[in-house]
Amino acid sequence: MNSIIGIVLTVICVFGGYMLAGGKLEIILHSLPYEMMIIGGAAVGAFFCANDMHTVKATLGDLVSVFKGPKWKRQDYADLLCLMHELVRISEESPVEIEGHIEDPDNSDLFQKYPRILASKDFVELICDTMRSMLMNFDNVYQVEELLDKQLETMKEEGLHGSHALRNIADALPALGIVAAVLGVIKTMASIDKPPEVLGEMIGGALVGTFLGVFLAYSFVGPLANRIKQIRDQEAYFYSLMREVLVSSLHKNETTLCIEVARRSAPHGFRPSFSEVEDAIKALKQAA
Image (cartoon, rainbow, N blue to C red; front, side, top):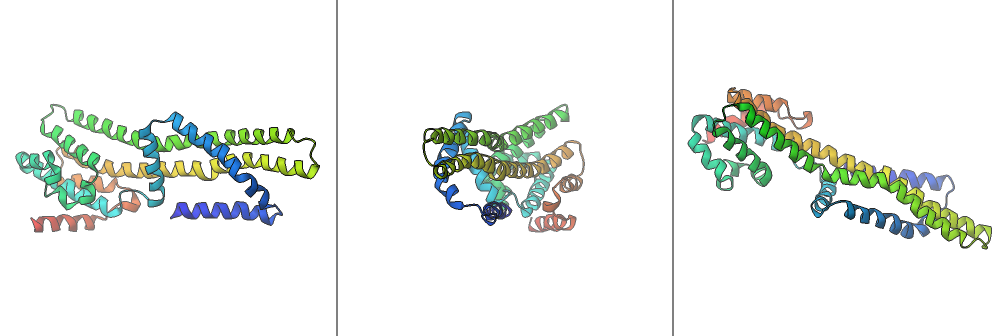
């Protein structure tokens, strides 16, 4: 919602201020389709040239997430803490039983209680792989911790590919605007014998290219890239909750302490209260 408000406010203030100052919108509207074709076409072409299809698809998904918001909501953080509580508890009480859950999570009654988490196949696979490593009795617990940290770092870096790609386009747009403006000047110079009022309109149309390049870079594409980065960073906090629980468990802390350490590491706006987590865990025990 904030992104939509920001876009609408930007358009109203920029073009509204221009018109209130006496500017003629007809000049911009007349040149807009051609200038946008040059600048937008060059930007899209450069985007495809610089990125593989995986990054292209990821960027399109990132743009959707800008308007939908982060994937994980506040309730998901509480659900994850409950899921991790049960996984750690079962692994400590019965390593044989936990294997049934981590070897086939799709058919695990424990994972099925949290369908939104189960739907994230990569995340579930990460949980299961890490717990599988914990059951292999590594001589040094820091090996599992290091392995998990590297995998989380890789996931975070991959999640930022779309943001990086859009940031590169935002950096290029002002220069592409100059390209469009130069082409407009070339067109104007070819009509140098025209009356001054005609040349003035043609030069004004050429300058629309420079305006569009800067406007799109700093008012749209750049902010969108920043918003995508914020969302991906926020989602990384969700994955770090799982890390905090498992790492704390590796160091032989009690299950309740593992969950509390993870809860406190959640972002403020998404952090469930102590009582919420406690009540949810009690409900799980009663259901069992």
